[in-house]
Amino acid sequence: MLLKNVPYRQPGLFGLIHSNRDFTQKEAWGKNCFNSSFPASLCSYLYSLNLENVYIKLNSNLKVEHSSISTENFYGIDPNSDNLFYAFETQFTPYQQYLIGNLPGVDLVTQARDSGSCLQPIEIKLTALPDNTTCEFAEDYYGCEIVVRPDTIVYLACSIVENFRLNPSTIAGAFTEKLVNITDWTEAISVIPLIPDMIDCIDAIALSLIDVQKPFLMQPIWKTEGKSPRLVDNCLDVFVWSNLAFTRLFIDLAKIEINTYGRIRNIARHTRTIIWLFKMLSDFSINGYFNHGRIIDSLSYNTKNDKAFAVSGRVTHAYMTSAALRQPRITKQDIKRIILGGGQNLLSPERRFDAIIFNSPDIFD
Image (cartoon, rainbow, N blue to C red; front, side, top):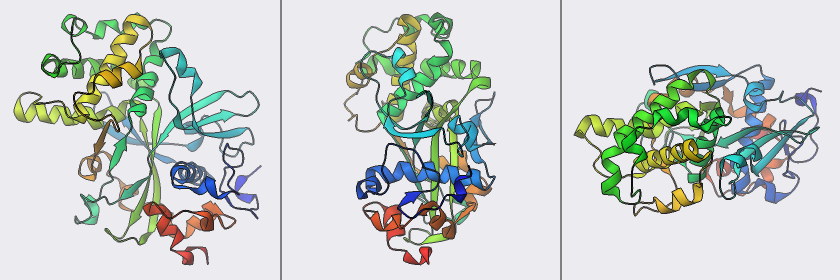
């Protein structure tokens, strides 16, 4: 069955035939739903056009590089398959075995309908291009802000330790004696001097997994005319970060600080994220599991846990710069082929992208 040939007389999204959201109902188009369901549909739409997602991976020099990944390989199943189920804001239950306490939900889990098996956990960040820090730049230097939840770091750790699930002790060699013997993780003064060693440890683990890195986070972009609310003609595309490439967003910031000042001066959000990830990996290497809730709650270092970290478009541009960032491949007129059956009329214009579509009826003429 070709999804692009399915007629829509009711509100819906391209390709999302089976999901835990009822798109005929207004609540499925609210601000907390649209930012994950629309990207999932956009990925399926790319596949229907024989286009692949831009894949941001890590290479053996610990630098990011771009390739491409099909939505089929990303989702773990053909997006045209009637066997695909989109489970939004759901636990990826295979990861529960690595945790003490309840596994948090992830934005999207693709599932096989016939077996009920979980195929792929996907974090989703629908991001505006440009952001507030790059909107005054020349178009070639536009970038997107990414804000990351603590739960995303839990899934990042799980995606890494999964490679060692049969023998957790195999990663123990990456942890030096002085790191294993930290006595008080809650005191910044005890931890700060060891952050460079934590970075080296995470890098060593990443290098050992280069050939088995996996897609982790979907980052669709929507591009406007500078900071105006008007979409440009070529306005949509999808970037996919591998789990290892994603670590560069916070590790590289710490490396810049070390190279500039010779040390880590204090625990900012991105350095705290390094500590969280390191502690999760370290505990797993010893116990075969980690207590994510305890790690995040106890290692706050006087900073709120509402988010793990955020990076501005000035930072992300270097990782994402590409033809797709300069001129996204999906046009404004394609939106009416993604949002179907009058679904735009059910949007609650509380977020910028929702509001732009809601206030752009000409797209659907």
